[in-house]
Image (cartoon, rainbow, N blue to C red; front, side):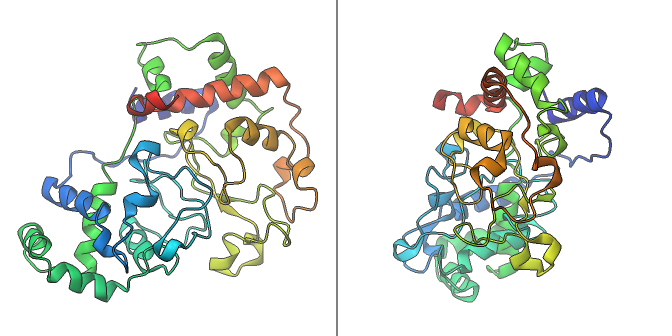
Length: 316
C-alpha cells in the first residue's frame, strides 16, 4: 500500500485534508551512494570511532536500542536517538525542531561534542585529503568537498530511507488481512477515545507538530524540549511528534528513552498524570485519563506492530 493510498484512506475515514508529496524519481544515484558512504564513515568523528550509523542503526530501523547513544569518548547523548526513516517530507528535525531541512540537520551531529565532536571545517579537510572521497565529490558535484555539498549528499541518501511495505500497507492493497486484535486496535487508534490520530496522522503517522505530553516537571524530568531552542514559554515541555512507522522496533521510547516497551507507552498515554503527577503545562487532551481497558490497550499495541516494514519484520 503506497503512502498516497494510505493518506487518502485516512482522509476519507476522518475528513482530514492538506497533504503534499514529493516525487520519488528525482534521485541522483551517485549522490545518494556518496551519502550512504558518508553516513557510515567514522573519519567524520573527532577520534574516528563513530559514524551516523553508530547511533542510527539500520537493524533497528535507523534508531538505537538504548535510551541514550554513545558518542566519542564514550559520552552519552542528551536525548534518545530517533529513527531517520521517512524523513523526506518533514518540516522540522530533532526532538526540538531546531533544524528546518535534512541538509541543515545532517551537519549538526558531526559538530555536537557529545556525538561526533568534529568541527565542520576539520571534517571537510579530512575529506579533501582523502583521495577516495575527494575524487567522489569531484565526480558527483564537479568540485571538492565543502559544507554545502557534504550536507547535500547526506540529505540525498536520507531521502531514500522511506518505508511503505508494512502489514497495514499490504492490508490497504487487499494483499493481507488484519487479525481481529489488529483490526480492533486500528479502530481504537482512529477513535476519539484514544486520541492517537489527533497527532499521529497522515502517511507517516505524525502531524509534525510539537506537543507537551507531560514529560516535563522541571525536576527529575528537566528537559524543557522545544523551549530550549525557541525560548518561547508556550513551548516549555513540548517535543516533536514522532512518526510511528516501524515503531515496534525502535524502543526505547520518548525523547529520554524512559519506556522500554509499547505496552508501557500505551499505559502512560492512558493516564499520564498517574505517572508524572507534577507535569507542567501538559496538553489539555491528556489531562484526563483516556479510560482504555486492558483489552483495548493490548489491541492498540497489536495495531502498532502492523506498521513495521517487511524488511524489519524478523525483529518481531
